[in-house]
Length: 315
Ligand SMILES: NC(=O)c1ccc[n+]([C@@H]2O[C@H](COP(=O)([O-])OP(=O)(O)OC[C@H]3O[C@@H](n4cnc5c(N)ncnc54)[C@H](O)[C@@H]3O)[C@@H](O)[C@H]2O)c1
Image (cartoon, rainbow, N blue to C red; front, side, top):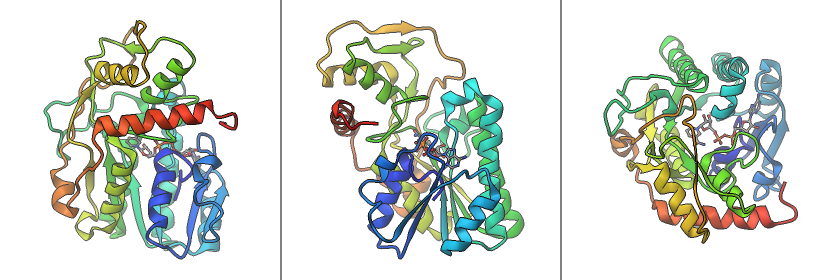
């Protein structure tokens, strides 16, 4: 798995270990990933962790040949906020990683690729719920790079008849989401509140997102992998519900017992205004049904960060 020490990747590792694989290989440069995210599996003799750069075709190839891998889940990525500061590096890196993986599949270094896309590919909703036929309209270099990666993956399916499918998660939240540089709104807000700072909202807060708890996203990615009819397709993974950023912040504030003010900041460039996914295809293909309600998932997430960020060993 590329990006296996990251947020979604590490949960996917935990989930895959429940399938009792003969081995699991994590490939991550640890730019944002953490060894700590793998603490539940890293002592298992079937797990190997490579601290390497997936931009290097050679490093990926060496690891694959050495380990004789069947399936690659491709999750390594430069995240959205970084693309606002380093657009060229984000675009080049994301496309290079995915093209390397596709080319290694073409060279028969492994057999099956599940590539991880993002709902950012759609941009702001033109209609809801957003199905896979919704136009792609990238608002950031990150979104553009994700579309390019998906297109490379699907083109390798069409041109070379390779075993490739694409899971397209909407926003995902839960324990282990990176809380440091380029963090998302949920870990950032929890962290600000723990430090005694006011939560911040960019823009009017009416922008919406479709949030899935990470265990549901991971179940969707496994569903895409297991489904023969998903080959060569892009499949949405979402909750099918939308929540505004204002509502989200108010829920976090309430859960954490904060009673102070909420600071408003100007809207950020490239902020999607509305997202609500249509999961009919995933439901039809592999009976996909998200299990964790938003309030339940948010409570688990807040509890986890409060524990982690207060613990002296947090790093
Ligand atoms: N988090 C979300 O809300 C969300 C939503 C939709 C799609 N996605 C997609 O899910 C996937 C995983 O995202 P995430 O949120 O877990 O991100 P993350 O930043 O937590 O994980 C990405 C991992 O990739 C690693 N990485 C970055 N560059 C690398 C390189 N050159 N070589 C090797 N490893 C490298 C990082 O160290 C990190 O561990 C990505 O493809 C992302 O686009 C995420």
